[in-house]
Image (cartoon, rainbow, N blue to C red; front, top):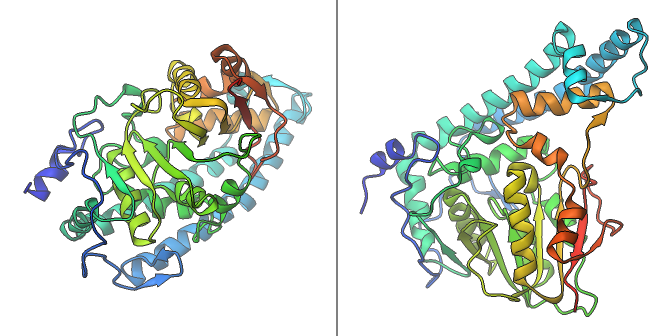
Length: 394
């Protein structure tokens, strides 16, 4: 048995070795009695946060995020329009991200909007990480107990060479997806704040699962979800297709470890693995459907191309590759405030590869991999209009 406090020290830096993760352990039994931490019970699908204090702070921060993203941003937009008008420009005039940033980033009102959003994010992460790390031994014991529990399984790879593109604190989350052994807990409750209270019961993920296109022949026996994080969408996909074998893959060991624990607690038979989306280790033609949500803006352009090629290899003839993200085609010019928002997201929100993403032509990349490409498929959801579907020719 490892020393849990040593684990925290070893994993404190991005890319730190997650030496406590035993690889390849498969589900054998239900969660042992008493191993599931629910100090305040559950609200249907969501386990309540461990204390009323931390829950109250998160409720406040969620409302603060809504205020920042709505009212403060509205004021910032009016300010941007005034700046543009004073320079003889229209808010609808196209310009590059660089031009938009140069024009707007030094204004104190627009800066206040960004600062409010960042502060909410930073305080939210600290609130959650302080809570889970202060009781770290108990949460690590909960994860350990779930590693060999079922239904489903988890395959952890502590010796995996983590690519450089994943070794950063994405969305400013301390430790990112790979460096904090309790990162799954922190990420799950942090994204509840991201989605402004609209996904406490995985409602958004349910709607996403409902709108994923399937092969024309209707055969869906095996499904792969790339970049699954803590598995909310993966579980919803399994509930949508209960007879299918469903896998969720993510580079982050803490993500898939938490995902499996939660799926086992919900009695959902899903398999999770810590692997690269560009090197999944599955055989050729193994899946009927490969899907992702908000994966491509988190990887380099090179990795995105490799992931698409891997998706083609994994699918059987007639199989579907369906990806959702912020964009599907290159975007080099936009309106001033929209361009500034993308620049700001890249510069201040640790969206390191956002500019790569905005320059990628995903339909072209998918066609180059051999797919028959369809960008008109239904499935737009929650503002993420970058849907692209590829069908492997029969």
